[in-house]
Image 1 (spheres, rainbow, N blue to C red):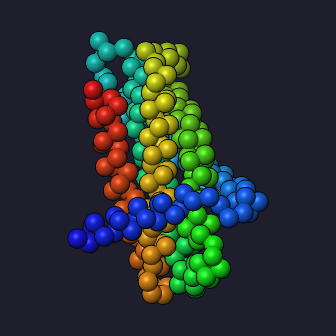
Image 2 (cartoon, helix red, strand yellow):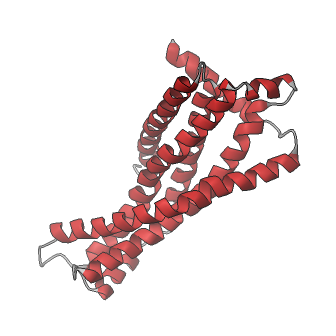
Length: 247
């Protein structure tokens, strides 16, 4: 019963969060600020993780492909497929769930315990839309760009590792990158990313919005936001992969 009660509150919060903004001028200002916080401030960590992720994938692929009958360009092909289909959209979003999800939950939770949300409600302002909607729209805009950049830097990291440690020649690696490419895979990765962004913001906002207590409660809410966001991402990843690629 506790699950159904919490899920009902989540849907109710989601309904109010998607309401029309009270002030479009304030909304536009907050949207720009949130894009900077969610997108630009996450760019560095996304690029660093992706470079090392691509390099490790190349090293592991080179270690496992020692059969002379297997062409070397398959290393580039395997790295490209791994980054586009799984590592960039899923692993990076799991990391962003920890960075952005905990930040959103603690920020909204602090507003709840200091009664700022109650003050907005008393003034007749839709507090859920006022606080959550700019974060949600900003994440839906920023996350796809972050994931595209993750794919690019991951491939550059893989290329660098392949050339520096002579795992595969540059021409073979690039040939593998171009081999048998389906543009639909990019659409699949971006679509997953949008779903994950929606999950991260709404789940984290739910735990922050419904905090009861003081600073300790805010800390517990942030932890729950990361845990439940991560579980929801993994579950939705399984469902989307089966629906879209599983036939």
